[in-house]
Length: 308
Image 1 (tube, rainbow, N blue to C red):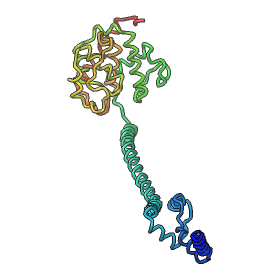
Image 2: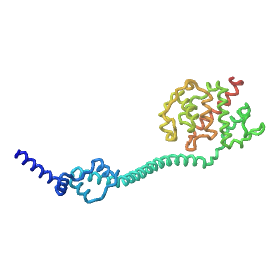
Image 3: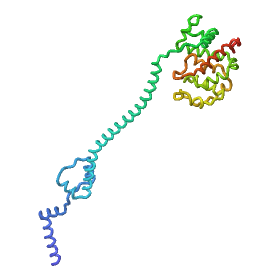
Image 4: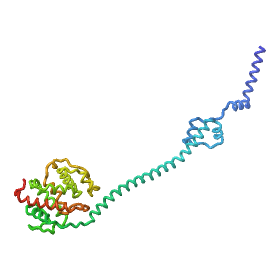
């Protein structure tokens, strides 16, 4: 009993000690831990989703805690990125904006130069008022033959039944005569059998009379008929730089036979002065053309009825 009483008294004194206010304060003070923010709150403050209280205690906690210190550094980096990113985007936009106009300017300049050169060439052609040469006697005689046979009936440069040679000084009139001669060649195909081969070959060896596609292919067809290689003619031609069909041959069926309509497409351009302005036609070529026109007129008298 003495032992139990003694232990009870000791426990009673212990309970009294615990009930003292000072003991309670010390116990609470010793048991309480410093306040720590949740990690989610710290992260929200770091990225700017939550306002951060500016207190010395918070700074001491961040400096003392390794995780908070890293978050604080992360916050600084994020802040720097936010401030520098708009500037970087502006610089990139400025570089792109400067580069694109330069490329567009270069392309525009190239296109402008291309079209400008073409426009200047066309303008030069339009500005030059061409004065046509007087028709040679053989061509005058042939035009009268066309008029007599009715190939110029629909021509608006002829008033009445009388042919005025002065009306043939314009390009329209001479072009009309060119197509009338081609129609004449289709109707009088039989004449082609009796034409002088040497004169015709001499004409086509000179080259093409103009850069017109119809004239070029007509001359190439005749060269194919005479087995003349295009390279031998095109290399010496003064129009080869502007020609769209240099050194090209034809493979159609017209080259197997001599067609008078094809012949007329070529030889009539010389006396009508419808050749290219830069072309200097030798006198021997002009003489061959004159003889061919004379032959055609003489042979047309023997063929009374044109081919239907």
